[in-house]
Structure formats: C-alpha cells, structure tokens
Length: 109
Image 1: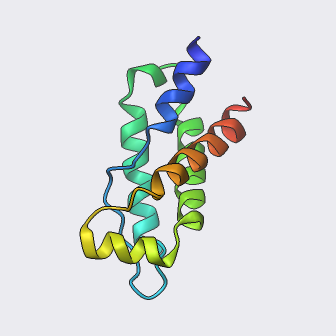
Image 2: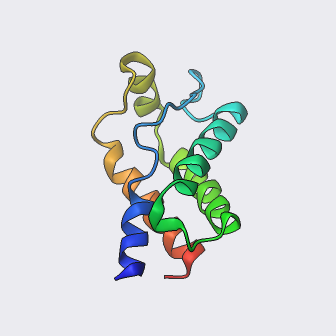
C-alpha cells in the first residue's frame, strides 16, 4: 500500500507550477528547467508520504520528470500556455505519463 501511495503522490507533481517556456521552440529553456526542478524538489521534500525517501532519490525523480515532461510538450501546447497562462487539457496525459515513467525508473517499481 505504501508503494502505491508513493506512486500516486509522484503522479500529482507540478501540474500547476509555472513553466518558463521559450516562445520560439515551445520547450523549457535552461533557466526554466532549473526552476521547475527546484519547484519539484521543494514539493516532494515537503510531502509527508516521502519522509522515508531520500532527497537524492527525489532529486533524481524531479530531474527525470521535468526532462520527460519537457520532451513531451509540443510547440502548440507551449504556445497555448504562453497565451492562456495554463496548459490545455491534452497535457494532463503527458503529466501522468512523465510522472509514471520516472516513478518506475527511479523507484524501480
């Protein structure tokens, strides 16, 4: 049960965080990537369910998550975010998939 709860917590990551996107490419720039990794870390460190997970493991998860999500965002979705201050609903599946992939990879589950 604890493993399932950890996975669920990981999957609810960052969706409402601000993403600094490059207008020309539609992907995170270097500063945006760093900022999102730091937001992820802060969120994960403060979740009670992660009290038994090392910061090193959470750091690896956050790097993986931000990179995977960044790879999945299309230019159209990035443009939508810039114009509307939020991602379109189509991004929900990408948030879930990036989180799932990294949880399985980093936590070996």
